[in-house]
Image 1 (cartoon, rainbow, N blue to C red):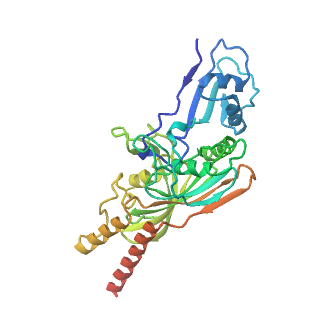
Image 2: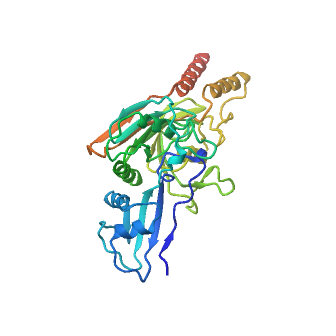
Image 3: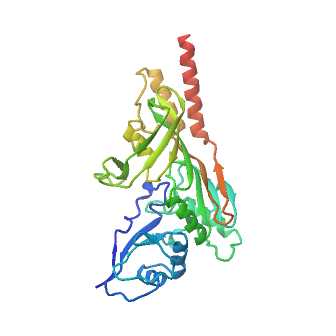
Length: 358
């Protein structure tokens, strides 16, 4: 009887479903050891039973505590037994044939031999995929890496730990070698990274702060979009904490802190709350949802949409423990010009309304 490999991570989603999590960048395996399996080291067993991996990569995963046997951490030399349940979280193998080096300008705010922090611009897809084989962040980073003298043991291809939607701007960390990738993957998997986003949402939130909790998964009728399943019947557990930064009556500026990171989590959580992100075309935020019916107000909103032709979402801060120094590092990014321009217009709009009431 062959060993059974079950419940692997579902297939990588379309590029417009890229997210700010490691869900789609890592593969989740659950292996039930065959009842007649002879004694063998854990690392040797896994390297021979998972296609496309190596013993060294398995050892890195074990060291990063990304391998469990019967729900317990084990060492690489653990001797597997029949019917053991092995769970392992591995980065998807890089597909070098997809990564064409391209000289594309990047806003790199920090870089050392292990990690790179980039401030991603709008309209930039993170990873090559169907319909977006070039012009992506990884194409640009691969070119950037090839212009450098690569230290021994480092990869000439950027190794991702998380993603950001094409039309979302802000901070993203990239690793340069597998040990750093595994080290950060553990922090993302255990929700130890600090990540905040700034979003402009429709409506006036009732509270000053709150938490949105509800499983996030693919919509059952349209797999190109996500949905919330409060009963937990589909998707994965997701938690978004938020607080109000400023109220404009018809829209609210909020800070979001991710406890988990699912595909489109912030966008679909606020849609589920009845407060879609401003100009989010996928989730209904690209029309007037709050406000008055005057032609002046309608034109004001249309002008805002033209200034910000995407969802109003920016990855503002990112903090994690550095894989080499083991010190906690923290990075921040100011709002991009398009979001800032729209917020300035709302400031002026509210100011004018108040003057009219005086």
